[in-house]
Length: 94
Image (cartoon, rainbow, N blue to C red):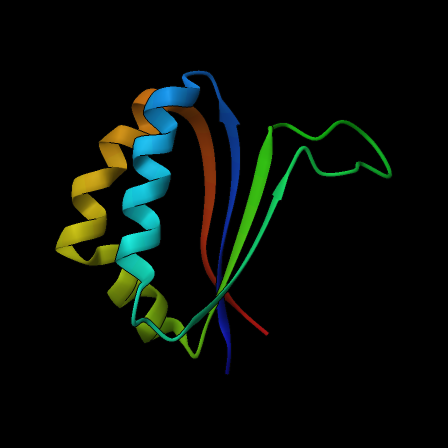
């Protein structure tokens, strides 16, 4: 059953966040994941609490957690946290 990681991001240091994004792209190279990303998404109702949304689809919870918990990703999390306010939902299944 597919599993997802969803992040809502409000960037406040664009230059530093770009460092995180570039590292993130390298870290998914070779990983079986589908990625959807929207910058300034169109909001149909209410107020969207960020500047971006990212949805990552993995084969299952184990694959999602393996990527998130990987040493490489854990090393770049502080860059994301320093350059943006983020809200992450880690793994829900469909």
